[in-house]
Image (cartoon, rainbow, N blue to C red; front, side, top):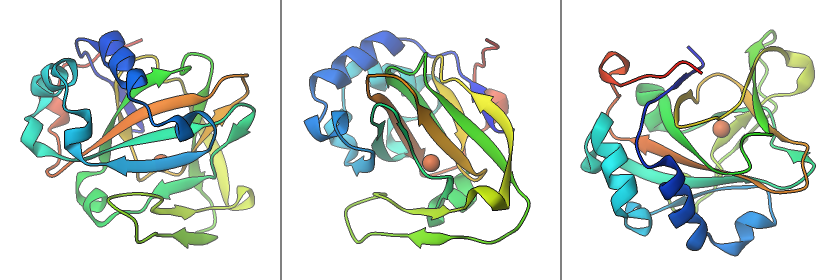
Length: 185
Ligand SMILES: [Fe+2]
């Protein structure tokens, strides 16, 4: 499974509150940046997380931004924890209705580059693939919160005039997909 929409409350409220405290660099740059959980400790997000797991099970929270008319490289998220937990919870924050993600199948196991920084948390840790080593399997619109398979190569695409901003949450232990309220959209 590449993704699964999740029935969570307060999605619009979460987006509204996060936009209020969005570090401005996310509007201007393509970036993946992790923040301490406390930075996003707000009631609507807590209430949503408590529907599927506990707040204490959050490992970290990152903001992923894709600037207008650009894309992120094809990659899998490279993080020791994710080898076990696989899924991140992605929540649309801004301009996700008209932008999308492409999932790929690897046809040549040939990693172009490994990016790993020494910064806090999960900043910029990914294995990059090149176009010729993968083929497209699925296009995904983040219409609402979704479990996102970080271990399938993917690329965010933004062909609009506004930045695309997503909140992505990683957990300490693997979520039980069968116990999560899902949605089909
Ligand atoms: Fe990713």
